Length: 304
Length: 240
Image: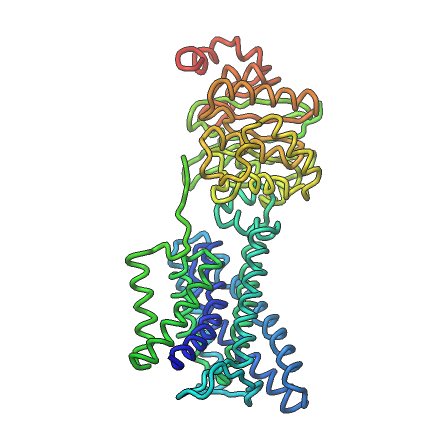
């Protein structure tokens, strides 16, 4: 029981991070119908930016951990957003009117480029930060095993919840969100109503990258290490989360992330961690076969 | 009369197919101009090419004296031209209210509440359906919403593509009356594309006949209504 509870906490933590990445997939897919396969690597890049800044600020400039993390987080969000903005501009925009596979191939190219760039400049091995905020709250004690909840885990889940609420509000209630949804449904009509479609798409990439950077920084904080190949597997898992939740749906992305995080963690605990990735990806296949529109995907109601 | 919209020598293509072959057309300030023609004559293409989608290959489009031929679509919309397009193009996963908000966005929501009251007065049906998703409306209701959405931006020029399509005759009549009233009371300029030539010609001050992507006739609406060639092609047999 203690172990189950502990894995539940761990799974929700991991799932929150997947959820934050999945929002980026789902928003971009929603608006231009394209899977941005470079999104996982954008996540990895953001973790590296946070890592470098964190080391610089704490080890060389002697800043305390908390302000250093905040600075690293904000800087990582800004730089990653800028990077994703540039990717959209250079690699995707011109291909938007082209056949569907073209931007996809371009995205895979971007993903390869990014992973290799970081490998060349940072090396292929794990890079780590010194442990920060290791305080934990003991939930049970005296049993065979102490179930703990760390401050970091609370932070991760709280940040995910707050960001989801904020973005839900933006998308549902603000002119920017309406313009975004309008572009999703009928970009040409949106343009007829004065919406700058290119700008709206660019903004979607910027927001997606900023969220991925939050995920990347939190991932680094929680697990302490990152390596250049970390874009791929977490990236594809977050994509799985987006599909499971119903691609295009914001709450679906986070729900899917939580489920994938839980499935992976629980499988690792009870069936051995060798096959935990297989379990997560089986979910992708099963979802696509039996429930292509996902858990919270919208059934299209349209009268002609 | 000063021209609000002036189209000269416009040609447009869909791939290799030429849809417009040198169209000249003008809409004056405070005028209702109708464009009639059969299916596939290029009426909707002309309507959309005013917004640069598709881009015209040759020719020039001026709005209020400004050359808009090569302007991006959204910037043209910001000059206060509103369109109720072919196929209505309602945002089906947005509520009626949100669709109306989308229409008002380009004008910075200026006079939003007043405009809302105005379109509710014209289409009381929309008020009942306010929280409903656009996609769940009937065809006629969607048509009303498309027109209402266009009116939400206080346009200087209103482009209406087949406003009568899919509407019951009574609602259709009501829409034409509304257009007339907005024109007379608020000086709204209207450019109207219609298959229902009879009603369109009765409503319009002036009209053009489009055949195979070229204007073959133009004149006062009332004159065209009496023209034997127009009568034979567009009015008798078929239309009301």
